[in-house]
Amino acid sequence: MKNRRNILSRIISENGLKSGAETGVGSGLTTKYLLEAHPDLKWIGVDHFPAGFELCDGTRMTQERQDRYRTNYEALVKRFAPRLRWINAPAPQGADMVEDGSLDLVFIDDDHSHEGCRAAIAAWRPKLRAGGWLTGHDFCEERFPGVVKAVKDSVPGFEVADGEVWMVRV
Picture 1: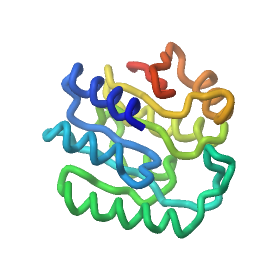
Picture 2: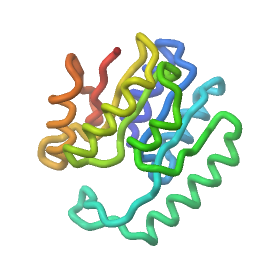
Picture 3: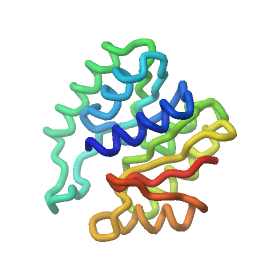
């Protein structure tokens, strides 16, 4: 967790970024960290809080846990309004609600299947302005081979940083 937030914060600071989106917000820890660290940042969180997907430890996400995450995130949306907008939708559909070329950074961390990650990349790449950053999490062959394959198939020139964060400037 720490590394992903630090890496994104560094990218934002070093490049003077002012807008971004995160797909798969979970409880909102990354969102909260970035908005507190960057008072001028405008952020879009995209998540519909589905249950049933496999977690890192081999268990499945419960609806009860997702309901807690949603409650936490709704509180963040209120706290950081109007800088934080929440789109309650899966990543590809959420992208339809964002103007092309309007964002400085996109962080993809939702559906970890090959097809889901590839669809999120395809849907969100056009939302970036020229010189923006396409990034994501869980680049780990052992735990998330679908993410690794989707990034390798869809993101030429990407790099991987500590914390399993993949990134490329577009």
